[in-house]
Length: 112
Image 1: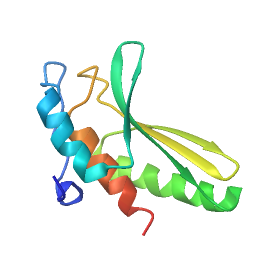
Image 2: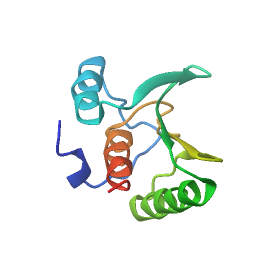
Image 3: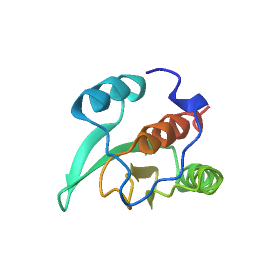
Image 4: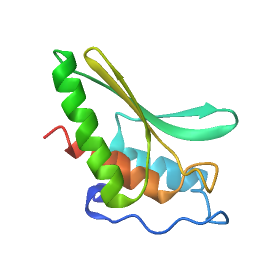
């Protein structure tokens, strides 16, 4: 699904359906540099971004924070010298929801 960045997150409730394995594989094609990890039994999308210095990494982190506020969907952002790691997952659903893939695609666009 290549148009994920054009979609808007929907309200996600505690009983919101997680993506199926088939949906996961389909949506991963649109965000090929992301990987699925599992922490504490919860699937998450993760990607590391590298930068030439801390200031550029910091600026990118701020763009992700703005995106998160605009979508009302909030990731884990780890800022290090020259590196930012972003993890998206739906806290209320305790796993991956379509919103996570939308935000991952929009995160990629923040590099442009």
